[in-house]
Amino acid sequence: MHIGLVGLGRMGKNMRARLENKGIEVTGYDTNRDVSDVADLAALVAALPSPRTVWVMVPAGAITDSVITELEGLLEKGDLVIDGGNSRFTEDFKHAELLAPKGIDYVDAGVSGGIWGLENGYGLMVGGSAEQVERVMPVFDALRPDGPRDEGFVHVGEVGAGHYAKMVHNGIEYALMQAYAEGYELLDTRTDIIKDVTGTFKAWQRGTVVRSWLLELLVRALEQDPEFEHIEGYVQDSGEGRWTIEEALDNAVPVPTISASIFARFVSRQEDSPAMKAVAALRNQFGGHAVKAVD
Image (cartoon, one colour):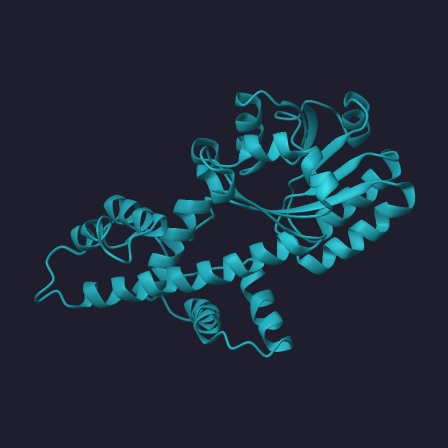
């Protein structure tokens, strides 16, 4: 199978490598000419066999919108666009409607795995018609973690469902990181009795009910910088947490824990707390998100 991949940044370049390692041919396009296989989107489309599949992996919002709009003018009936970025699910409705008059199909894919996906595989939450999802199942199988399909991949529902599931996933992620971070600050405060904070978290990695991959990444961050002396406690939010709360409000679903974790990130922009340093370190560990270094 041969697909086009638009966006070869932090996530996209590793996705291309994993796809190629699994036998999927990839032609990639990026505005960075040093990593791009082709000069522009028109050349990308020309390089692909028909019916074409183009996976868009660029920042959500205006950039994704511009790429899909340009692809609409280049692709043909029977071609397929997959948006694998962190787009809001309502954007999927707009993009599917834009492409439909030309007979271009659309699938949305929530992708989790960060900078570790090349090695471990990516968790995939997909929205679209059963026919189109089945058509590109070899691509999803190549990207997902090895093992049972239903433990790393789900066809959630129709267009928009994949990004909706990813939105909720990221809202939960916010809350989990905040809980670990607050626990870190409490342990780190009691220097009179707690002598090994890193070792405590490390001991929780096996046999305890709070064990998780996030916990392993927190241990990794602590081993690199035990007091987070080189990180400011400033934490950005990329949108999904806010969207989760907005959806909860619209549907009268109480999400107090997720809501509190979002507001905690706002607090991080006002004071340099140890807990928010831990959240910043966690985001850097799993996603390669930039941190503000201490001067």
